[in-house]
Image 1 (spheres, rainbow, N blue to C red):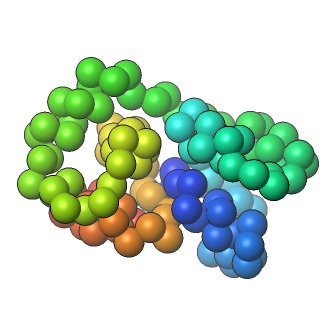
Image 2 (cartoon, one colour):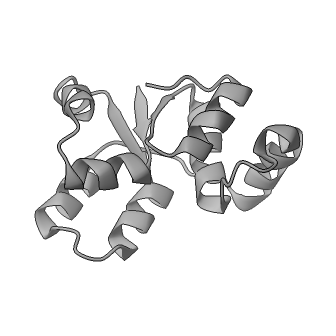
Length: 120
């Protein structure tokens, strides 16, 4: 299963991401509340996309204390990465759920490699 992060969705809305389309057609895409929230707060999100996004299977978003502990355990991997709180929660959800990540964010990609979170 694949957790698609916000940057990948935004990129897909701008220019069709054929890899993401394949994952969707295969029924492999998952989302989480952090990604949905970030996308809903963005401007210009098509209403049909918002409905489709919220219809996807959703993985649990880790509670704040668990995300803080995850960041502490992997402090060296996060240092200087530019990864923010929302991305840390997405990474933790993927790591905890054994999911791959589909992202276009360079900082997230670097942290994924350091944490051995599999990129899709």
